[in-house]
Image (cartoon, rainbow, N blue to C red; front, side, top):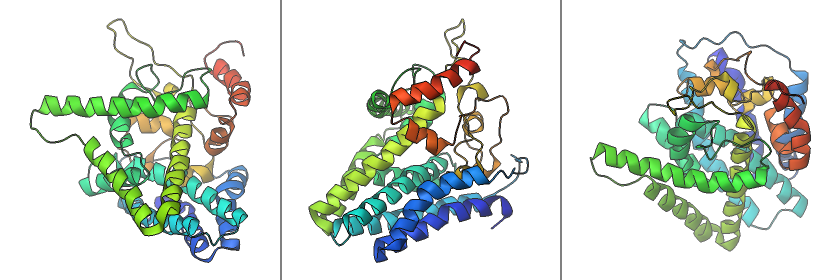
Length: 343
């Protein structure tokens, strides 16, 4: 595996091992997984100030897609192991909570980030892997809503997944979940009509696939398995929505005289430069460059010096967003300064 991808592999595969062993053996492994996804990640972000070499967008990085494919395959194995462990009733309540939290954070921050990468790949098998990761977390419609709605309308009122200034996370999450489901469906329906080739809307697959996953959990592990799957999916989806909320909060694109939005630019996404969480989340905190180049592999995403920067790491800001008053107290002055207004 080449050097630009090796650090991503180490950061993302370590929690896979810890969570998997924790789900089977319990005990200290569960807490090691929980601490890795929380205090260890935050601490490493504070300690590591390494600078990556300048990104080369022209460099071929086949290992990046290989790691993404491996993470997607391991996602399904890990999901089954965790649901079984949570459903069998053998864990002490504290260990149960630690496993649930560690796995939920992994599915929300790593699996979601990885699926996001895969649905932007042009190779169909990779795209399908990303789509099915989202479906397994009961959020398959994000495959359509993200690529066909969010990337077109990010940082505007037309995008359900762009948070408005002073909008709290809980109001945003309701609007974003329902709005992305509806707008993604409309986008797919319009594409079918435009192509005129027939076929069915991929929402059939999203919904049928989600039902199949939860039915399998219920059949194999009973009502407890069904509950664990639903609860894990809710927690992972919340992580995704928190990332959406943080990464575009209060940033807006201007409307031109012809009624069209200005092109999306570095100024329309919040970024974070913390080395460890960037690698854990497959460079998702370099969000501006992703919007500028959606198909660019994650190791090649570049930092934009003129892009707005979050006051802390992306995971830390996502946790802060759970407390809307505190979020506004911290984030609104940063937003005001970036926009050149009095704080």
